[in-house]
Length: 116
Image (cartoon, rainbow, N blue to C red; front, side, top):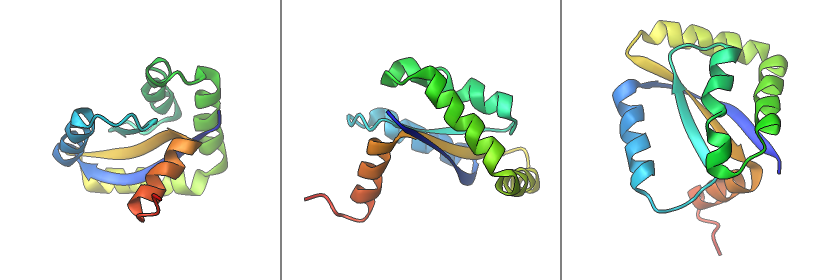
């Protein structure tokens, strides 16, 4: 399997919590997760994704490698989002997404109503 990791944006904690609750109540198994963190370091991102691997049956090493590759190849984006998180204040989280590529593609298709 191939995986994707992205930064989605900054969100108030309560909004993120509400979204996560809606996802838990959904019966769909999407193969993607949105994560929120107040500590935006490579170590914290890895700690966030490691527990997901057994849940979805993902290859832990490949998921962690995907996060590390994102971190190493997107320094401008990392700096930008660190700054936005600091500017937003402590009642906010940086939201990231980790997904299996096919699940992510299905999510995007459902957003633009391409399900046939």
